[in-house]
Length: 62
Image 1 (cartoon, one colour):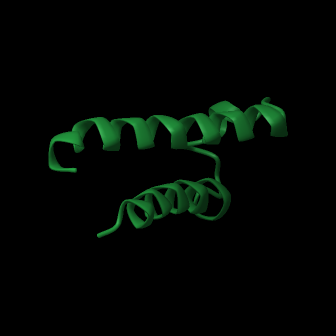
Image 2: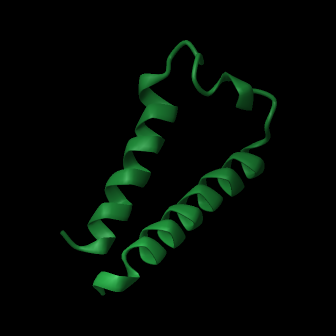
Protein backbone atom coordinates (compact mmCIF):
# COMPACT_ATOMS: atom_id res chain seq x y z
CA UNK A 1 0.00 0.00 0.00
CA UNK A 2 1.44 3.35 -0.91
CA UNK A 3 2.28 5.82 1.83
CA UNK A 4 -0.02 8.46 0.39
CA UNK A 5 -2.97 6.09 0.52
CA UNK A 6 -2.29 5.27 4.18
CA UNK A 7 -2.15 8.96 5.13
CA UNK A 8 -5.25 9.68 3.11
CA UNK A 9 -7.25 6.89 4.79
CA UNK A 10 -6.23 7.94 8.30
CA UNK A 11 -6.95 11.62 7.69
CA UNK A 12 -10.22 10.88 5.93
CA UNK A 13 -11.50 8.68 8.77
CA UNK A 14 -10.75 11.37 11.36
CA UNK A 15 -12.49 14.05 9.30
CA UNK A 16 -15.51 11.80 8.63
CA UNK A 17 -15.77 11.01 12.34
CA UNK A 18 -15.53 14.69 13.26
CA UNK A 19 -17.99 15.99 10.68
CA UNK A 20 -20.44 13.16 10.10
CA UNK A 21 -20.44 10.36 12.68
CA UNK A 22 -20.18 12.32 15.93
CA UNK A 23 -23.59 14.01 15.89
CA UNK A 24 -23.90 14.25 19.70
CA UNK A 25 -20.40 15.73 20.11
CA UNK A 26 -19.41 13.10 22.66
CA UNK A 27 -15.93 12.51 21.23
CA UNK A 28 -15.15 15.94 19.80
CA UNK A 29 -17.16 18.10 22.22
CA UNK A 30 -14.02 19.44 23.85
CA UNK A 31 -13.42 21.46 20.66
CA UNK A 32 -16.78 23.29 20.76
CA UNK A 33 -15.32 26.64 21.81
CA UNK A 34 -12.48 26.49 19.27
CA UNK A 35 -12.46 28.73 16.21
CA UNK A 36 -12.32 27.29 12.70
CA UNK A 37 -8.70 28.36 12.43
CA UNK A 38 -7.78 26.46 15.60
CA UNK A 39 -9.55 23.34 14.33
CA UNK A 40 -7.68 23.55 11.02
CA UNK A 41 -4.39 23.89 12.88
CA UNK A 42 -5.29 20.88 15.01
CA UNK A 43 -6.05 18.66 12.02
CA UNK A 44 -3.01 19.82 10.08
CA UNK A 45 -0.86 19.14 13.15
CA UNK A 46 -2.48 15.73 13.52
CA UNK A 47 -1.67 14.94 9.91
CA UNK A 48 1.93 16.15 10.30
CA UNK A 49 2.49 14.07 13.43
CA UNK A 50 0.93 11.02 11.76
CA UNK A 51 3.24 11.41 8.78
CA UNK A 52 6.25 11.84 11.07
CA UNK A 53 5.42 8.73 13.12
CA UNK A 54 4.71 6.63 10.03
CA UNK A 55 7.95 7.66 8.32
CA UNK A 56 10.18 7.30 11.39
CA UNK A 57 8.79 3.90 12.30
CA UNK A 58 9.08 2.64 8.74
CA UNK A 59 12.44 4.21 7.85
CA UNK A 60 14.25 0.87 8.18
CA UNK A 61 11.96 -0.59 5.52
CA UNK A 62 12.26 2.27 3.01
